[in-house]
Length: 177
Image 1 (cartoon, rainbow, N blue to C red):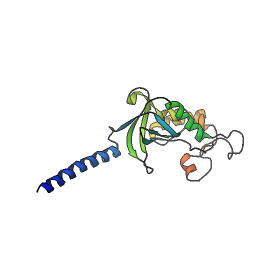
Image 2: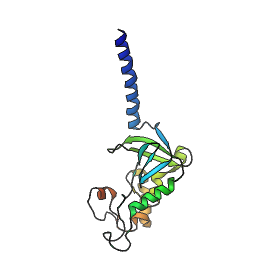
Image 3: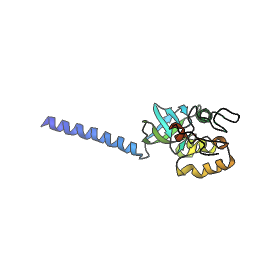
């Protein structure tokens, strides 16, 4: 009888932990990571040992070029590297706070992240990257902001832009000019 009770108690304890993890993955909004960020590219970094990708944006990839032509002529620039450098400059030496929403297919946390202030009162990293013309808005939250930046032809919107997801898939060609 004692063994059955121990097994039932262990099941309940383990089950509760799994339920918390499932809620955290679903994005209850109460799971955070805070710390200095090690930037990997224009929309992802590691903070407090967790790999994070900014929710609602897609930045050009490292090695991806923007501008006129096919990467051989004047006016062409490494916009993937520029996006990485931009994000690194924003977070350098600052504490980053990320709301963990859910994991993507690569195991990274998709998150809204902030620098400065406390939580939502800080600067939204996704919004900053879109406002600087260094990322495509993938969610409606930043889409209006992106349209304004596109009209001003700033950052990646200056010339030819291959949509980052198409570039990753090897489908080259101007998505926006």
